[in-house]
Each structure stands twice: as structure tokens, then as C-alpha cells.
Length: 344
Ligand code: NAP
Ligand code: G4F
Image 1: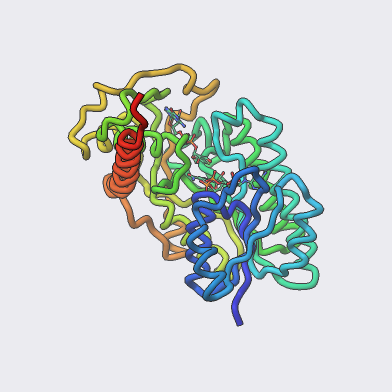
Image 2 (image 1 turned 90 degrees about the vertical axis):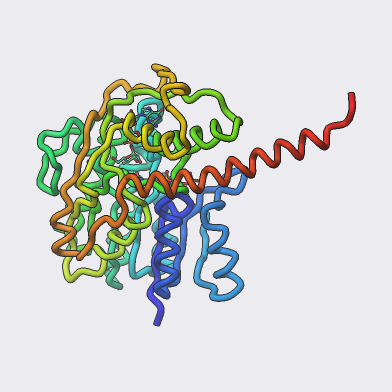
């Protein structure tokens, strides 16, 4: 019989890749979607269309992490075998502008879904995954960071994620809930939101190449991140829930690059000099910066048989190839519009 999974945050980067992975493994996948005035399902429309017509494997439900009662009702109705809690206000700089909302969604929201899982677990075993973040290490106390590195969060987002992380551990210990926390370092893809630095760079570089944009405004170029490929990282989430016992794992590549180095690779692939186009705008700097993150995923390699398959050069190429295609389509549309203009 098919296993059933519930994914919160299914419309996001990771949610869409995870849904693909689970459907490929034969799961019935349920996803939580926020009601918006426009459709927000572009990352999963291909799955919904295909699965609805051919396999009936994907079901979407309206809901919000801030509405605990509705989440509990949904969990008890669906009776999932696995819950992946990926929903979050996931932008670190935005969390300084919306600290209370970020906490309501990322911290209290996680508690809502943990409570729902605890209730379900009283009558039917359920496994729970929490999307924890390397941001919790913040101004890191040691390098590289492992599962035992103390947290030193530097933003409302990181504080909210640390709360959710500790509650996940607490529910595992107090209620014997099979609850895992994946401490994931930055992971990117062509589906990455366009306001995160990697995608902002690959979108801008390809639009500049096609003559659609002149300049790129960025904040701190010296920050270093351990950037991996999102498709690899959702596989790690699934592996965590297939183990005999629940635990917490760092997921990372083990190499770090600066934003400046990322620029060099991305613009270099297009035979452009980034220095000719990039300007610093202080509005993209943060009140408190995380200068450097570097993960050690040895535990995941040993226990889960997981390791990153994609280095940063390959990752940037995947993103540039994808975004160049988008920029070409945009250019084509621009020319068609210009040709269709009425004479004035
Ligand atoms: P993302 O693309 O920003 O996706 C976030 C998802 O959460 C979207 O589906 C979003 O819905 C949903 N969401 C936001 N607020 C919500 C609310 N109040 N109620 C219900 N759903 C809500 O993030 P991602 O990169 O896929 O990351 C997935 C998770 O991993 C997040 O929890 C993030 O904090 C965490 N994480 C990410 C990374 C990374 O490098 N990507 C690293 C470590 C941890 P809409 O589509 O409607 O906005
Ligand atoms: O791409 P970012 O916004 O990612 P950040 O802050 O590391 O957070 C991401 O990774 C976390 C895992 O560690 C996740 F938990 C979180 O949800 C999110 O997915 O910024 C990366 C670095 C920062 O140091 C930032 O200051 O790039 C620097 N940066 C420089 N200019 C910029 C910009 N970041 C953004 N977003 N936009 C800029 O213009």
C-alpha cells in the first residue's frame, strides 16, 4: 500500500523537489498551500497536472502555519505516515522587518504541527521532519559546524528556527515522537526564490547578457556560504525518516565560497566581468551578518549514506543555463511586443 506524506511549504523550492521525489517513490503526497490572490503553485503545477490526471498522487489543501486548529484537523484527516515541515518565512533579511510574523510562522507554526503530529501519534505512528537551518550557528563558535556545535543565532529568523529545532528534540525525548531535525546549509537551484543571493545573481547575469538589465545591486560580497544543490538535500530529508531511530543531521557540502567568488563563477560562464555591472546598495546589508558558514556532514554520510553530489561550479552552471533560457524567452517576448506596437 502507498505511504502517505504531508508537506508544509510544498509550493517552495524544497517542497517542490521533495514532492517530486516522494511521488517518484510511490507516495500519496498532500501539500499545504496558502490562499493567495494569485496562484502560488508554479513550482508544482507540472506535478499536480500529471498526477491528478494519471495517478491521483498529489492533493493540495489550503492552510497556514499560524492556524494551529486547522493544521491539527488536516493532520488527523489525512493520517500521514510522514510529515515534512518545510513551511517558513525563510528570508533572513526580511525577518528583521517582520520579526513577529517570522516567529509566528517559523517557531509557533512548527509547534502547531508538532502538536498535531503528537496527537496523531497517539493512535497511529507518524514520522516528523523539521527544516532546521545552518543560520542557527550564526556567528559560528567553531568551524566547520557539526551537530554538536552550539547555536549562536544572529537574526529573528535564526532565533525562530532555533526554537523550532529545540521543540523538535523535545517532542522526540518527551513523547517518543519519531522527530528528526535536518540542519541544512544553503541549497540552491533554478527554483530558488529570486531574492536569495545566488538566484538574484544568476537571473541578473543572464538578463545583463541578453541586454535586459544594466546593473545588479547587492549587499555584503564577503559573506561565505556552503552552497549545495537542493535536489540532493531533499533526498537527505527522506533518508532521515527511513532510519530505525530519529536523530538530527547536518547536511552540507563541506566547502564554502564567498558571494564575490559566486559572482566570479556566474559572470565568468557568460564571458562577462562582474565588476562592470555590480554596485553595492547598503539596503541589502543586514543589521547583523552571518559572515561564514561551513558544514561537516560526516554523520549524515555514515548513518544515511548521503553526500552532496554537486559542487558549486556545477551548481552555478545549472542555474545559469536555466536562467539564460528564461532571459532568451523574455527577450523574444520583448521583440514581439515591440513589433506589435501600433504606429503613433
Ligand atoms: P521557500 O522557497 O521560501 O519556501 C517556503 C515555503 O513555505 C513556501 O511554500 C511558502 O508558501 C511556505 N510558507 C511561508 N509562510 C507560510 C505560512 N504562514 N503558512 C504556510 N506556508 C507558508 O523555502 P525553501 O528554500 O524551499 O526552504 C524550505 C525550508 O527549509 C524552510 O523552512 C527554510 O527556512 C528551510 N531552510 C532552507 C534552506 C535553504 O538554503 N533553502 C536552508 C536551511 C533551511 P508560498 O509559496 O505561499 O510563499
Ligand atoms: O541568499 P541569502 O539571502 O541566504 P541566507 O541569508 O544565507 O539564508 C538562506 O540560507 C539559510 C541557511 O543557512 C536558510 F536557512 C535561509 O532560509 C535562506 O535560505 O544570503 C546569503 C549571503 C548573506 O550573507 C547576505 O548578506 O549573501 C549576502 N548578500 C549579499 N548581497 C545578499 C545580497 N543576500 C541577499 N538575499 N540579497 C543581496 O542582495
